[in-house]
Length: 484
Image (cartoon, rainbow, N blue to C red; front, side, top):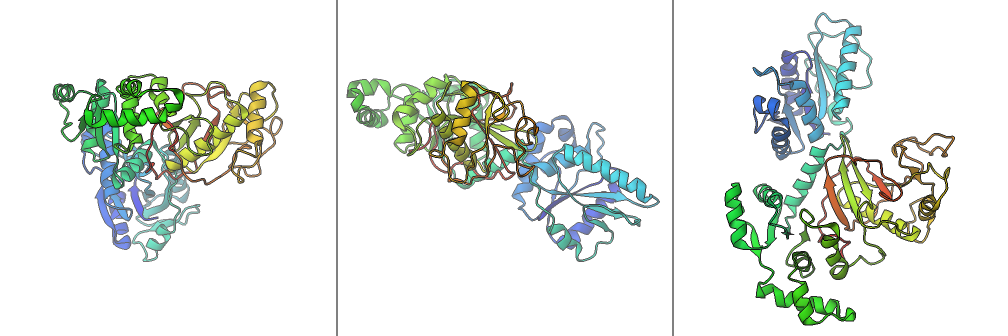
């Protein structure tokens, strides 16, 4: 690994000495832990201040040393918490620094243990300890270095494992970085909702994507002015624009000819904003559509059923929720579209959910959920999940046939041996596997909060637990259904 930050819980002098020595032996760029913000903003408004610093640190490159924040005149500022949260969000290895002068080995061991617990609570990874002022011999499972640092200290640090936790901020930053690198045009068919206008302004200001609104240009300009938003770079297209309407109507009539749809009916249908936005994606005038803020799920995805349809080999359209937890991202599917899928459809949903999770950089480990732990219970829902898990026709060859997990059992831990056989690896639940499939789009709805209730067989059919790398955004066209 090559990005580090010094965290000194009890001594600013130790932090300064350790940072200077690390800069010397590593020979890397140094970036301030308060770059783009102030200690006051960091103390009072951390939710808005931290993303700016994360962006500054990432812009400095992977090979960087973060100069830690230290005590400030604002006593509300917890510099240790700030440095640890920044480390977690930027995947920087934490180097703990302590002034060891006059301290016993027992005291230092206790202080290191306490600091590591605090780092763990912040989802940050401690990769080494630096002691200043002379140091007694210590035993630890991370390298313990003393000042001045020897020349081999750089190699020791670079050999440390790269932190693997994925915090919500890190996940968001990864997506933004990938989106900027492969900038796409996104159509937003709901400019009447102020939240859509505000989000679009943020996307444009950050250079994440190009934006097209489906609506009235005068209204968008007027409302943007009232809200103090700069949407001058956005395109606004009317559903009655002849440059689009006739072309879209002809194509929709062709697609729905077997259903008896006439050209006149098609002209009327594509003036619905959801149909119009979906046609923009289908016709290549946009790369993806984001909708559902002011419309129902059905209104949003039915046009995709009729226009984009499912990917080859996929029998059912499904949805997936990306849940940003404290230190990882979970994917839950299907929680919004299919109320009572068949076993065959369940298997398809699991496969498609895993593929979609992989698009977002989440290496899937699939767990089929029901209200039963393994096969200890019985009933139509349990039987359907068991059959879907065992279906050899629908799952990839690398997905082993194993019993489903109960939604009341954490799917990152083995179930009790009494009710479900223990997995071969303690890091993996009984129903997990690690397929690496080619990405494929399906409905997505990112969220920063955990589900309000535990998923059940009827509400969440497949859960994909990630490994710990989330570095991808879909580069293909996306909408509410798998891409054709």
